[in-house]
Image (cartoon, rainbow, N blue to C red; front, side, top):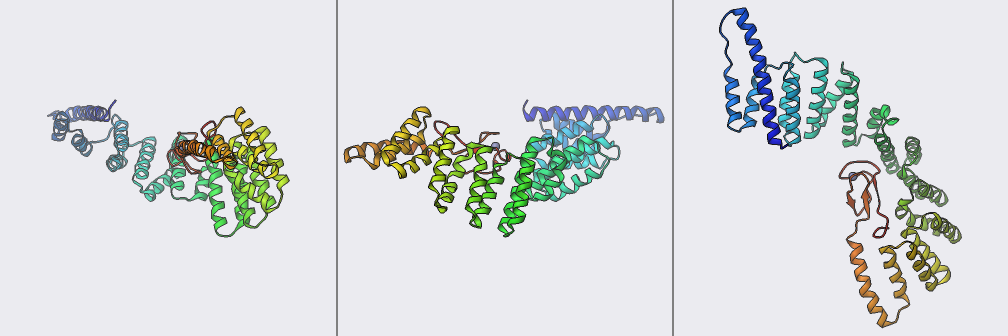
Amino acid sequence: MSDALLLAMLVAAIAIGWWLGRRDGGRRKTASRGGESSLPRDYFVGLNHLLNEQPDRAIETFTQALEVNSDTVETHIALGNLYRSRGEADRAVRIHQNLLARPALTAVQSGQVQLELSRDFLNLGLLDRAERLLQGLQKANADDEQKLAGKRLLVDLFQREKEWSQALEVAQPLIRTDADIRRAAAHWQCELAMEYRRDASPSLARKALRQALNIDDRCVRANWILGQIEWDISQYRNAIRCWQRIFEQDASFAPLVLLPLRDAYQLLDDDTGWWQFLEEQLQHNPQTTIVIMAAHALKKRQGTEMACAFVSDQLREQPSLRGVDFLMDLYLEDSDPGERDRLELLKQHTQQLLSVRPRYRCQRCGFDAEQLTWQCPHCHSWGTSKPITGIEGE
Ligand SMILES: [Zn+2]
């Protein structure tokens, strides 16, 4: 159903509800006064706007003239929500505020209107006003479901303000039961850890990261930052231990960790350790990034020809564009001038294909990106973006 049709229907619903309310009131008045009954002028003005296909002006008239009764509250709330969904949150605010000012609202209705008004404020970026309303709702006589919905909005608000500690505090009762909140909460601890790391407080950062892993033991980012903190103080062996845990958590993050891991082994002058690690990974997780790293290590130990044979074998098992591109690099090293031209032409094609492939994709909404972001810029989920693997990926 189109917005315009829905809007017209809501206006009509309000008009009917409002008219019925007036009629009953009129009857009562007629009975008590034993005299005249008439519809006020506003009703006809509103109806006139409606008939002239001016639903916006009609609703303005009806809402201004309306005496809220139990028949029209729900419709008014829905109308405000519709305005918000149409991008007219300021109108939604007027309607919801108008409702909230009515003393006839029950506690449940009042809670519902406060929630919607908070959503309007959040939509308009008026975070202070939304926060005041939502904090009030937590203390008010609202039902449990409304308080829970209010908590979720508060969590959303504190995330926007980057108030991670407050988000964690409000979300605490939801962490156990809600997987999305749990994953997000671990990332809020990581955000705090990043702040501590910037302030040169590594012990506080480590504490926050341990809490992140307590909340969600699959939080790759916590081990990633723990490794970085060890790297900061030149504890390369510890950094390796932290980063290697990521392969147990989610091996698809190999492209993120492999280069710094290699550098740490190099700084420790531990080629054997690096090779053993790669061999182990090739058995369990032979993805292209690992094959390329292993080929580099093999070339250093046994020469280009062995590396070429190794990559060819791996590509037969698991084809990948990036692998083919790398194999051409190896061939180019030992090629004669005639071959070189042909290989370089082919390489241009693979490079072109690779340059238009995104490297990361959100598992929740499918948003593609060149850089890894821990919070998806499109659907705002935490920890759902991952390196793309497979034939055209890593
Ligand atoms: Zn997403």
